[in-house]
Image 1 (tube, rainbow, N blue to C red):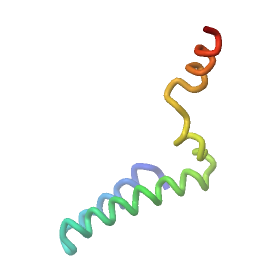
Image 2: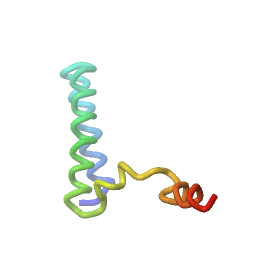
Image 3: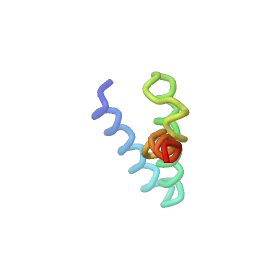
Length: 68
């Protein structure tokens, strides 16, 4: 299934939840969908846990301080 089709299904699910369940249900579906997406990326091997904990400049900042 392509990413476009997956996005279409997710959008329709959020629309139904918002229409029938109100704003709280819409937010719940959106948050659980985002969590499911991240878990799916972990399962596919496209995402590593370390990606969330690395600094923006990597190790360059620490190496630069050591050279001074």
